[in-house]
Length: 220
Ligand SMILES: [Zn+2]
Image (tube, rainbow, N blue to C red; front, side, top):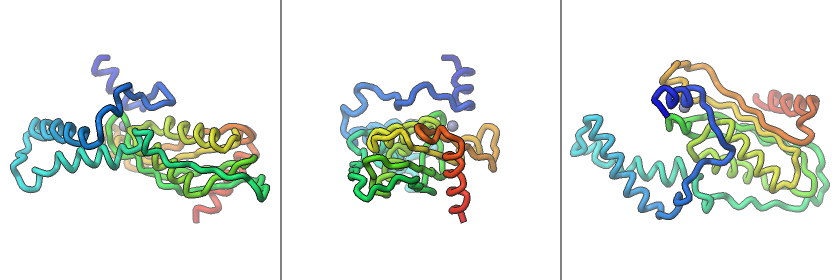
């Protein structure tokens, strides 16, 4: 791929796959080994930029950076960190829409490794299974903590929820700001990006509109 193509994929935020592209060897090394290796490589980057790593303020940065990448920002790459999403029988027979909104999105763009921040709004209409509310937040947090594109993040959350809730009737809406749009490139501070993925009865416009109305009314 030449440099022009590389820039164009980044600026257009193009992704090619619903699954996060991972190497087969992605989890052969322990987290601590990864932290050690990334610390080494990031110190090289800092040195290449001309920074003096013997300075007290900078000397610990490669370690802090590596630990932050492996254990915080990108903990969601490793399936072993996936939250347990226990579901329960829908014993009370609730069959209407359940909306969980303003779920914090703290993610990173996979093209520039800069923050994506915003909110997810999610709804489902239960059939036989219901899920603990905080589990939806945990699932969002998990998939957000990977290098991402917003479209893929929305789809990964949708597909998992449809799978464990055993229903297609799920909608995932994400409204987020991308630092790679606001702080570099076009440098637009105000624009934001909205993605909406859904299935089942949410294909119907009136059902979707009900969801949007609830979101609007509740965002007080
Ligand atoms: Zn980006």
